[in-house]
Length: 266
Picture 1 (cartoon, rainbow, N blue to C red):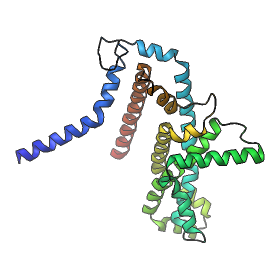
Picture 2: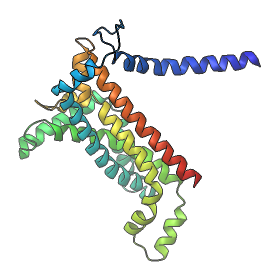
Picture 3: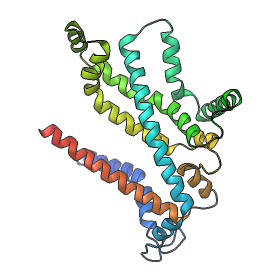
Picture 4: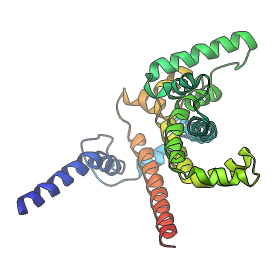
């Protein structure tokens, strides 16, 4: 029994060490006075000061945040409606095609997806003259297409768990389908929508491939900027920015967990 317990702890420590030691080393070396990633020469905040002066990196980070917020919001709106239609209104004529088109971004390689959206935008530019150039809008379109599929999967799983008799009772009392959705379904699936929004935000912030196809001059997202710099060697400013983002995400997770526990206790 004792050996079994020790083995469980060993696996636990190795597993979490494999996951979190690289992140911990990144945070530690963001405070390293040396530019070398393998040599510790002393504690310093010089790379955070250098980050504040790196306008290209900060501009890319701000652009990624704006696109991620807009993409996640649009994906939740479209994906929630698609999930509701998928679960409550099917099957109907063209239902298999609807499912296939909705889930296609889940299985299509991002390279193919990026090329397809780029060709579509080029054709639109030729026909109607919009968008005039690749930039924030084109990246946003690509990220929405990618994120809608993930949002629909998360929200649809929650809608399937709902008691359909609640909706039927509301309609028996004279509520319209639209009223039923906004008054009954929407409050019940709100936690799933929040989770889907966070997932879509993360996917947008993390995307390199689609943004590489759809960006334009002056519109470089943070992952693309970091990827281009890493090929020439990891810069300590990137470690500093990553540490700040890890801290912000950690604070948000702690606050979210506290609110969830308070709601559960009440």
